[in-house]
Amino acid sequence: MTHPVLPLHPGKHALPAIPDPADHARHVRSRAPGATLADHDGAVLVYQDRVLAHAVANYGGRRTDWVRGNLRLLERRGRRLAVCGGFGLGAPAAALVLEQLIALGIRRVVTVGTAASLHTSLAPGSLVVCTRALRDDGLSHHYLPPAPYAEPSPELTRHLVGALAARGADARQGSGWTTSAVYRETGPEVARYGALGALTADMEAAGVFAVAEHRGIDAAAVFAIADSLADRRPRRDHPRTETALHNAVEAALAALTTAACE
Image 1 (cartoon, rainbow, N blue to C red):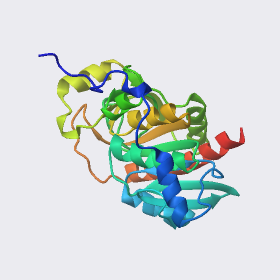
Image 2: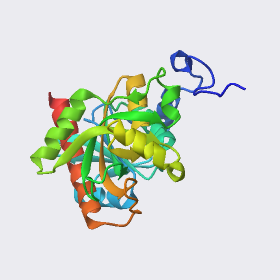
Image 3: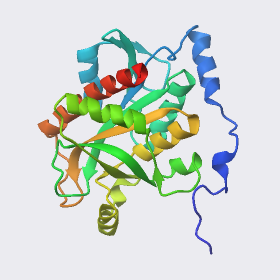
């Protein structure tokens, strides 16, 4: 028997889909006429409820029900931005909310989350900007032609690196491994992908990059290291990781603003 490859239907990435995210935008506007995100510089996606709570406490913002999750519209230094969380973990959850954000007008997105380290040199609280993501997620193969990696926007990534540096954050840059099977990460995979240069394991980056490329918008990603697969340190609530996530959200908001002004 031939082993199946994703997607099961060859060339699916080039075919039109039956569901259209524009339908979601029309539904939202039937309840909230004039609802739009086209006048916002971009959105930050976060995955931990406590990170969203910290962002709300520091930046405020008006809550809307325009997308699946908790979408906060805020003004920061005279610019309009959005922070969205509460929609779940993994590439499918991130892709669903990203499609809805794009349909409402978002053109830039930075995803800020935690990741596991594939190298012993990365301790909890280290920040890593993802320069490309190995596509072991499943979802990205429905959006892009076959290839090992999904790529972020070089321009938005450059702004993100600059914003982190401006805040004194010592962020590494490198590729990551996006996988949907967090309880099936194996030793041979960690060794192989680490040898290829991957610094992290996460659940969303490849999916976010793939949706962004397919829809023609800019995306970037930054991770705070929470645990290690290289010398198996189980996840703990580490204060350095929390501080790193807060710094990353601040830098992501700044990067979206500077990218929009360029």
